[in-house]
Length: 164
Image (tube, rainbow, N blue to C red; front, side):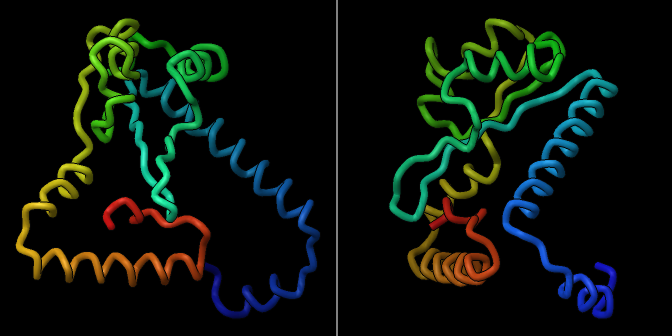
């Protein structure tokens, strides 16, 4: 971001794993605080809830909460947000999210009745690819594999994994 000369200078600074981990946690906490303050100043907010699979094809909830109680605790107690200002929730359409009685969206609508729910457009596009001609789908799958390979070389997380 600052150029090659700045990169060379910072590369000479030696940091322990603990120092790097502590600074990463500090940055994450600061970003979270800033985000919550921006949400509070905007008043209205929406949520994006997702589930995906890892490389072993095991489902992973990309939410840091295993149930609505955990999410509710975070929204009310930790963030100080109010459910009445939640105007939207977008999910991947998984049963755990959209179940009529016990899904996370149903629980959110109990505490935020005016909240609208939508199906994530990326997941809709993913579903649409299942109906595209095999030749086009094969090309898309190859592109996604290449992108994921490149990303895995740079990071342990791959954001496009669910498309494969």
